[in-house]
Amino acid sequence: MNDTAYALSTSRTLWDLVARRAELTPDHPVLLQDDRSLSFGELRTRSERVAAGLYDMGVRPGTVVAWQLPTRIETALLSFALARLGAVQTPVIPFYRDREVAFALRESKAEFFAVPGTWRGFDHTAMARRLGAKGIFEAYDTLPDGDPDVLPSPPADGTSVRWIYWTSGTTSDPKGVLHTDRSLIAGGSCLAHALRLSADDVGSMAFPYAHIAGPDYTVMLLLYGFPAVMFEQFALPDALEGYRKHGVTVAGGSTAFYSMFLAEQRKQPGTKVIPSLRLLAGGGAPKPPEVYHSVVREMGVQLTHGYGMTEVPMITMGAPDDTTENLATTEGRPPEGMEIRIAEGGEVRLRGEAVCQGYLDPAQTAEAFDEDGFLRTGDLGRLTESGHLVLTGRLKDVIIRKGENISAKEIEDLLAAHPAVGDAAVIGLPDAERGELVCAVVERRAQDGELTLDAVTSYLRAEGLSVHKLPERLEVVDALPRNETLRKVLKYKLRERYSAPPGHSGTVK
Image (cartoon, rainbow, N blue to C red; front, side, top):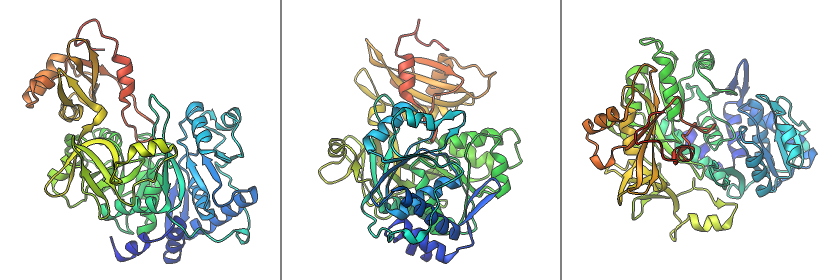
């Protein structure tokens, strides 16, 4: 991290960071979208006007404001306006509907709710009214506006809880994760330090800004003074025009994004799909080693993958100058200030400034931290001699077959290298004889490629997988179910779908 970025990373609050960057490079762009551009100086001045408009509406320091908005320049302005006021903001992923939104509004006790109106065919304003939300206002292309002279002083304390993020709900309600300005700055600093970017780079945000990755990424822009392209709707190949137009040098999101870029690259081998691109970077989901090798070999760019979660936006990150082995098989190293402990049984536990303050529910907070203040992640892993973290699975993603623990990730990594497999998820299904049986659910890469249980198990045997870990059931699908944020595979949906025993083991659907 250069001296300027390091000095900025010591900012007490996010607004300090905005103000200091605006003084350094006021005319440099920070956000790009279609034909629009916002400079660092405009980010400060326009956010203050929006803050004044919110103040006129009754928003004060400590007021809880929920917002469910797409990835747009206006969304960033609203978020930083709330940071300028010292309000408590709770971003809600725009794809969430009545159940999740009602839960977030109720649990956070939101006094205002910003929505985009009708977006992608869904009327968010009508939903907000249906749910009885307070202080509903639309903030898609128009924002509150006022005279900044009415504003109180900016917040001086960066360690108060001013952010409530929501973990992805599956079969249960999401958790409200409590963050401070300092924990978000620490997370963004970790990312910036690992990727070693410069003011000449152009980043990209293809994920929901309401995700924890939103401030994580924006902090990096503020630290290094370079812009990012925002994509309100990300779909390939349509989004490629934006990457090419703005000369994006750094792209990514998660493993699913890498695979989507690879699929586009394979349509035109030998010609770079994004000529300016030099680095893919992301996290949020496991990365099979074969995906790394395919990106480097076929796209001609570097790939650095990291490890983060809503509770800790950045834990480890691969560095561009890491060895090929470490980039392919590990999640990178933790930055200074992030403590990783591998507890008995292999669980990864964390302590550091980027770790959240806990959850809205005090009982969940008490359960989440151990007696030494380390966060229990629920992930399994080990540290190498060089300090790189290798994730081996989830506590709840270990298949217990006849008393033997089987890592789903180990099998998934091997399947990802199969030439006919686009992606794979391995799950345990209830079985009277074995306790659980191993079921592999795979996406077919090529429609003319045939996948059978016998062929897959023969392949895994040849790759050296132990016999007791071989799948006893195979399901072939057109697409694995994924969430709408970083497109993680939703294994609970696969377990629900396939828990009823098929007509016979190995049925292909």
